[in-house]
Length: 299
Image (cartoon, rainbow, N blue to C red; front, side):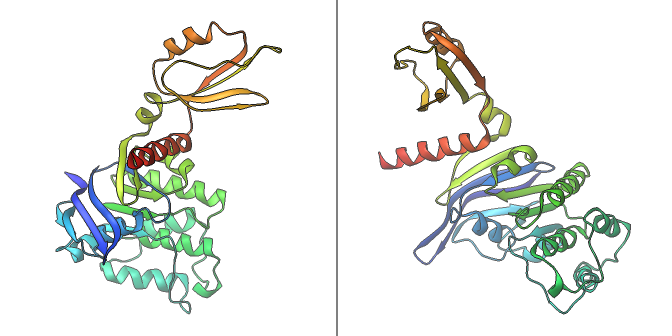
């Protein structure tokens, strides 16, 4: 069974685009990254999953529940951490969590107190007294008290200091090991790179690529950097697959898409003093696909 499955899912706000023909399958038990800049359609997609919006056309399911018809059932099995957290300010943290727990008809148990300890959360403080980071910690606890089958996160690390971010990832990995599916929407590529199993890039409301992170980086792109011996004239590389070549005072660097042996055969003819071949970071891969997609749209 898929945790999330959509077919042609489309949402317009009047004439304005939300998302268009979103076809997505998220396997039960995986951590799925959903990447895109502001305005690309990430939040619209999440609101459709949570039945907070209704699609213009197409369909979507959460564990086989229809997002347009089964909103109450979906909300019982999904946890959600929004980008911005707003609560009743006069409540204490514990009062707020107890209030939330009543929606699920559960009592706060050992699972709850483990989360509180892991995030070093003061239950006695009022919401109005909390920093943005501490409010986000409340949201983490609130999203997990009912042990959801699916956890949806919208920019979850915003407002958290690095130490708490590490605690958050530990908690999420632990929940995933227990079987929780995680849908992780973010523009912080380093978070997605170290945390997710598979990813999808969304641009202007459309998914432009979907793959697992290691395949995306390993089979498609390499980062090549070399420096010629002093006094050597600059040369032009003729190998196909050279992308985003740039020359700096330290040498020549570019992304390469193709078979490394073919490139090395050409480079071996040059008076190279130093060369490195590395795996690009996810941001470089991300930008390559965005730029390629934009060029295709213009043509």
